[in-house]
Image 1 (cartoon, helix red, strand yellow):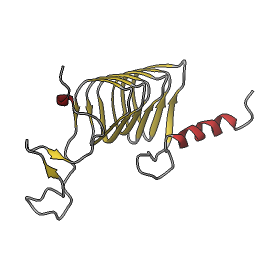
Image 2: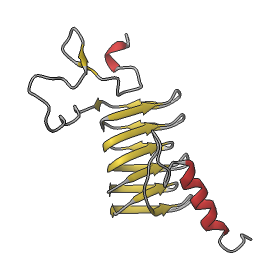
Image 3: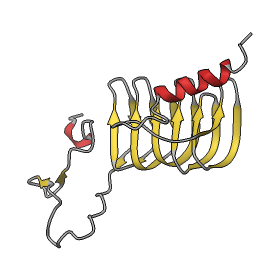
Length: 172
């Protein structure tokens, strides 16, 4: 039996592991407002003010104002839209994150990703395409300036935002 408040402490501890409430590079700050636990299933559309963690099964669509975490046991068959995402489980659907997507070792994503920053650990399976829109130019920047970003011979921006190999660099 769990001590009074023990379950809440465990959830807070796990949320801290994923950076909720901690301000640092690469971490997420937010309110964990929704959790779908292991052995739980949800089917439908959900709109979340704050963040959510999915360790069970979800099918439908997800829209969150902050972060979505798909745990190692999580299975998501949905299009997902949020500010940030961390995927350690399986997702079949498109991911659209305003700021950042992290794919942790063992994750599987079958769908397209649109985000400004993509981090892919070794051991991830990703079947889809990734679109990384250019950041919005800062107010007051002059026309013709590239914000300090260099451009390659092909004219593409070399911003260094993605920490993964590009699809066209593989020979198959």
